[in-house]
Image (cartoon, rainbow, N blue to C red; front, side, top):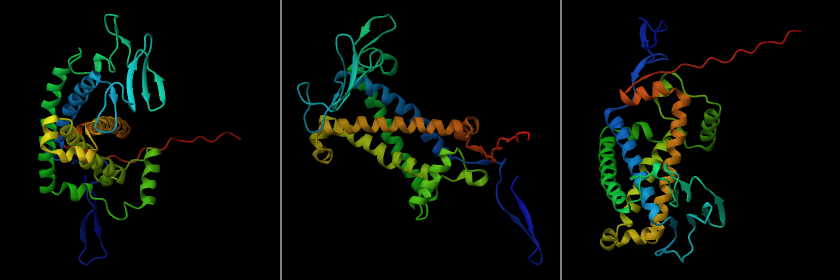
Length: 296
């Protein structure tokens, strides 16, 4: 129930509604946000898995306009006769059994960068992977465009993601980092508002990572490169665009794992319910563990 108090300092006394309090079930997420969220879950999963299969066709990344086997690659996932490895610049890490060289379900040795259980399709097929990737790239682009339009109309960006001057202060950001490190999450009505770390994370996904994925993906298309040559100029060549595309994918995967960790720590059932139904139970303060005094 909302907190209601009587202000007796006013004549006649006025009933004051302080808004929702801990334990109240309130509306948290709009339908557009929930549809955007779950569409992205499926879309990005398919694009990541099909993208890894595409990467298997040439598991090397370069900077610049050109790149082939004899050229220097800043990242390579490969294999020797007996080992798998990942090379990042001068650093080389053995990854036998995970990346580069592994045994499939039948016990046969495979020499692909990424194993079949994490790719679409699970068997090696560059053509099929490209079909999956391109089909869901359209879903990603259309979903982002529609969500951006709706969020401008309903003022979601201004009301929920806009960062105030006080929030942008380094001391405020650092304080929020410390609160999260101590697992001290907002309670009551404060839990309905995004904190500065959430605003920075969600804004980076919406306005940086996803647009960057789409633009670098377009740059990788020879047809788009011919028609929109400025894309090649912006990213410094098709191979640089491919590297940025891969790095952005890794950043999105990192965001996913941090996001899931926060969901689990904040209460997975309540968080999942809010993203399915839109309704959320405002959390209260967690009980502090009792400290027993030692007998004298």
